Length: 358
Image 1: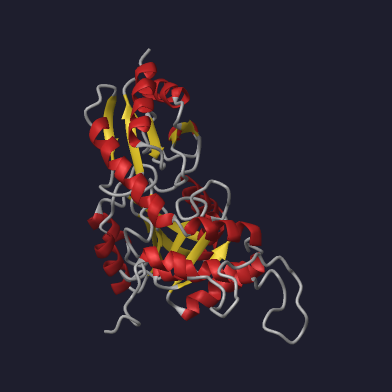
Image 2 (image 1 turned 180 degrees about the vertical axis):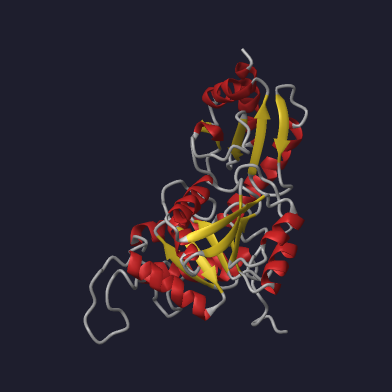
């Protein structure tokens, strides 16, 4: 294999893809395409269907996930498009302790008679496999948000595909740097681009990626017909953030591993949840929900806020949300490690945990 056709590393893909054509005097950075209207006779028809800024971002996302990407207005709209692939009354197998808003949407779809849900403990592989019989789709995330449990991804995808199911994964937490679900055999992978991939807490976007032309066309049709398309400014911001994603991920993950080791021996922490990789940690604080809230409010560097994956470190007691699954402990704090110096982050954690017990 020559150097010209060797696969590129992700660190190179995020820099190389989604650029203008290489020509003398040409720009290195693409512009923001804001036109909603196009003259007849060309490739583009209307701004709800086509946009050059989307396509630049989609080129990078597709390279990272080894498929063809579509940008959506949010991660939830990408998930909605994925659920729309199912037939009426189709059976979907999904984790009972997964991302809160995904679970809420599934319950609504079931209440409306659109889908039938089989809830499973995604870490109980054998029970998940049994639930696959007669189903139409397996949808799951690994690690699970916010418990950070890790599923047997290879086994579950293999078992589902052997039964003819569609397999879709939310890869927001693991990111393509840790796993590529399409390469493992999944049909669709979704992301909240709001999180680590854009990484600056200033856009709301999502993506769905597939290697199937048939599924790509169906997802594209959903985006166009439902109006779940992204704004060009948001797409450009996400692309700009994506250029530095591997660097940010490496820094945050390195700090997370240091913090995990220290948290495991902290006297005010009952349990540390960490999947062994990445920038997300969950801890259970001694003293229940009240102590967890006090710790979050005491942060001077850590911000008490929803969301994750940005350059700033965030933490949050997740059960403050009424729709959070009951499997999530009341005293659980979900921590998204940013790119600040790890010693500053640790000092802030220490003082906040101390105040939580007063």
